[in-house]
Image 1 (cartoon, helix red, strand yellow):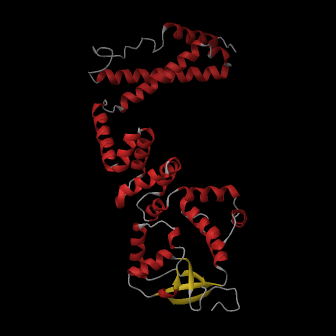
Image 2 (spheres, helix red, strand yellow):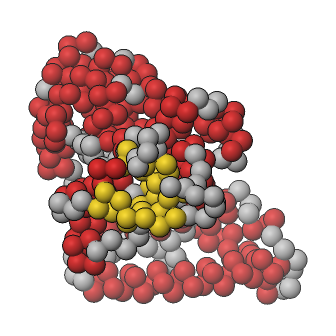
Image 3 (tube, one colour):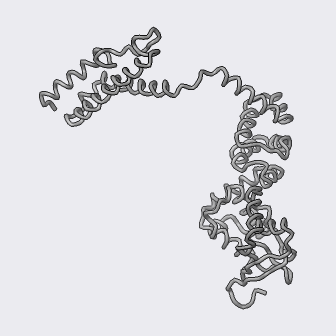
Length: 340
């Protein structure tokens, strides 16, 4: 039915006519699928799926639109609007991949797709790199990541049980270290899976634990995560309460200490007159702000120089010791005399 033209052909097909060999190349997104079902229910099918001719007459290979077909099946629909491309499967797959370079496909999905082209269509990594305008290293890294993960772990990622970020960051290195441990961990987590943060805790626990700890973690990962949560709660209960205001003042004090060290090291002597003037103006502004802060804090009644718990006993001429004040005084005198 492809005809003599290379132009795409619009068709209406029965879903039963579709071959779907690439369904496992994308991660199952339940939320997105629900939205798609709702959209089809309210507005019908807006975008056609893309197919190429199959190996048998009246059969078609689905290239793009797997989520739409799945949603139509959920709605008990038997037919789908499609566009037939007059090109081979491999050409169609490469064509649509190049069209969708900016899509949200994850690194693992890229790896699955590349491995499918290598194993199903006999394409070499060098040829794929050339046809995708990528480096051979780009292709090799993605294929290598997929081959590193046990198949059961990949299935958990496809099903949305394990987040692809967590698999990449924690399960890939775990599998490289011990593939059996990786498989056991994901199996023990079951259909509930684990968040990226939880996978990080589990991987850290396995990496840092002894043989007994590792075995207990692989047998009961939920108990390990519960213990981590309880430890975090105990640590939080013992930690001092957050004090953003004190943190900000500590940051100011840290800057003051840094400036003091630079002054003592002769930073002013290395500056020309315009730069010294800028320092002088900045210091005058700081002095005004410190004076204003002192008044506000003392007015509060429980902090300030007059309170027995106060650490704010600022010197009358500013927060620097006499040696630093002398350095600023010398600088001001040289400035008044027009020094360079």
